[in-house]
Length: 326
Length: 294
Image 1 (tube, rainbow over the protein chains, first blue to last red):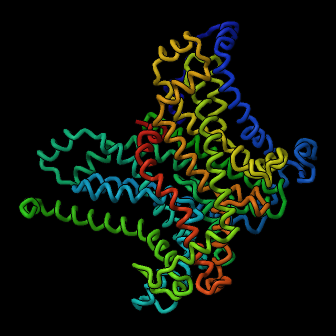
Image 2: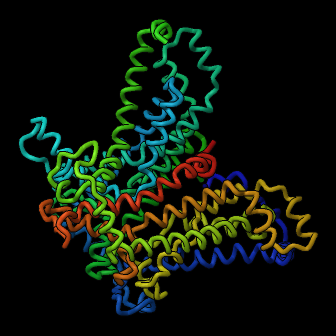
Image 3: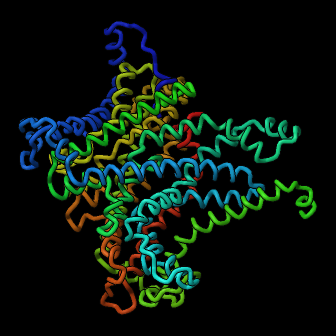
């Protein structure tokens, strides 16, 4: 994405304004194409950005859009309110906990899976497994949560099988126990996105020079050694890129950004203790309870943390590997 | 075959076995959940609620689909989903590609500024509440337009598209321009046909995105007539989630909410399975070019 920018940005020579104006007039149709898009972005992306000031104001939805600007400033009132809210620790704990767990699992598993696929000798079987593995990526979380309900509910197929095999006596409430939500969310995320992200790594592995492998084989290196000393080092740039993407969206749920959808669709009153995150809380207090200003402030806290994360991870990546996303 | 196996070292054999077992397992856990929903959808609803169906339907029945396709609520949802996908994809693809086309010219005046504006919008957002207020002000709440207008410009595909269009030889465009073709005509008659793989990727991904979206229907629409299929499915899931015993039996005695929902899930997954071979054909070239650094 943004890396494209870096490489190809047209270096406008220190030309004078009139030259640009002349160019502009010459390219008038192209300019119209682009400017239509920018006006659109201005409306749907930039106006909401200014709406952030709601979080610092005594705003009520009855005031309309104009009220955003005319309502009274209240400073950090809503931020203080959130920090002293009894939900605060729980929300932070859940948001950070689920996000870190996802980073820990959904990021390395596709690498492992891609290496495994590349080591498979049967081309046909490899193709079948790979094709199947990214199907769930294209299925919406609504359907996935419907399916997981069938599998994990107390009358679901997993409990049924476990009871039939006398592994358990009482059905396990996978969907209704607060203690199991984090694990469930991470497992479903891995299941859904593993194959999709493996594509990027697999493409990188295919690009590894096969001479390296042959030379190592002649030198007597076994397969594990070759994977460790050739395959993995060769795909490190891809790993770093994907890691930056995952870190940048850490609190949105990493690579797939699934935190909100999972918590919203799989969360219920029984597992609320571990399933409610900042994003779902913003919805609850904002859209359902109508406390717009307060919800905006809470949402802003997460946006700011995310932005800091994007820039730090990009900065760190630049320091370590010499290349960042932007 | 056996000889080849004998020749392998112990390490090779162990690794091969592990890979095959794990991959077979992955294949199973990926496919089986969908397969399970499929057989449940073809089984009589009440019978299915007794459990014990794993591989083939016990009592074959088309009741669930019959119920689905005769229920006005589901049909409306299906119709809205199809409509928003068609309209949304056409608008989205046209708008996104035309902006990407304009930006692909390196000598475009103020191009750098334009790109900065786009990139900022990719990383910053105002959050859901200001967004909601904006939609309200634009009168898009409870309006079909909310499905197709706010998401019409896909900034990610602008970036992918730019690199595609940039590869078109400049001479092609220039000669057409000299012959008197307008920029719009060049875009439709030259740029679009040449960039077919990109356009296909764009159509497929934006289309699938529209088809799967439940979010806007859930939060920005209250009118029952405007709800999408995925929203209706979410409603059923929510109503049956906490209490597993609350299976409401319909007027007909053979179907249950769950069995009809199975049919709905299959109906909703089917279009994706249908475009899946095409998705696969294009996404590796189309998406990975843009998202992953070489």
